[in-house]
Image (cartoon, rainbow over all chains, first blue to last red; front, side, top):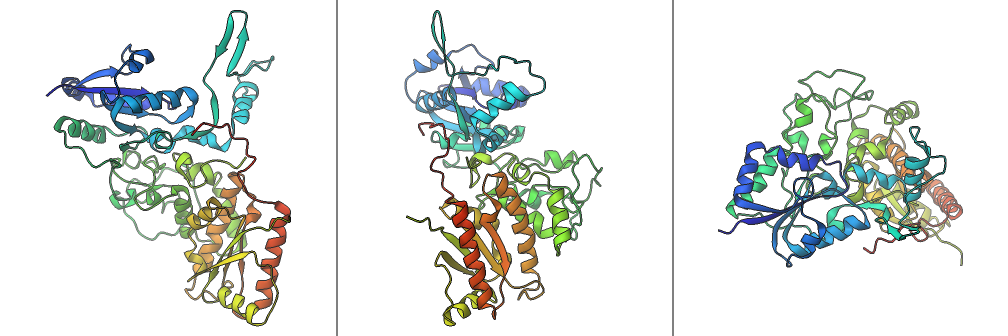
Length: 317
Length: 143
């Protein structure tokens, strides 16, 4: 069998996904045995023009991590889509917008104002901020056009498989590698994770789901055996897809929701809001006000990884 | 032309829907802006339904249930009170004025109260104006 051609790209994300691919450790040798890496800016020295020179559909698999928030990322997403037979949204940012999609609570002007003018570590007395086009004596310089709205990969190009996680766990990456090696690929559109919610997979002791106050993670050291939600921590388990291997739960930290909503749920944030409000014991105005004060940032907490694919998608401008 | 807000109303089967019926059979006049959806309980109103209404173009969402202590299912309306309160805080963060979501109680005998709540909600939304994405300062992404 001819070797598979593999491309990896890093878009609007922290770079953790690129590193997570290397976390499969010595199995990277299996990947190299079955695949030629034709494009991977982090690890190899191929340029955009090398990809542009390839024939359409000549790349077998593209692992694309990161959301899409500017014109360069859109260009590369479209380019890699045209050149690849199989597109994999690798990681929560590519699948749902991820942490960068929290930028959808602002628009471009607000983000630039904060990042380049207001941030306390800035020294920018001339109020310089990035311009798409800049005239200099030698000609015109161009930067990618930065958008108001952060998008998930499938909102820009067609995607065959989704591999969620921040970053995707080694076991699931291995599953993809195995599927590629054997040629037995799941049907397009598959989310490569569990079909259950995280709570269903979690083996902590769950008793009476009633809480009277909400703690933030730094405020208590939770009992490592008991349900974190019952202890008053906002654990996203009820509204989050399982399959992550309970990495956070095993580290005694509440789930933050990086696997996105479980099957049948569209809006992870609304569902988590519903679950949390249901178990909070508050039947009068005073205790409801207490609950509202304790959930400091509902929109950001419940949609931490999924703003781009949430029902409202972004702040109303 | 005057702006007529579109309001999606989720009315509980046991109290609010009957209160609305009473308002109708008593020939009380209220604004025709509410599109009523009968649900079994205000506690059945999944926050996703409220967001979906906004997504599909509603200017406001009205949720009406039984008075506290009167819920047919004992505590569905208390759950609604907690969920909708938290949801109002969340939609405000999305730049949607929290008056656009309103939870209130109407018993089966309160046709007058139903009429007043609907009229007041319509007035509030008329003052707020349409919730439309037109005019939003989107950078066109070409998508």
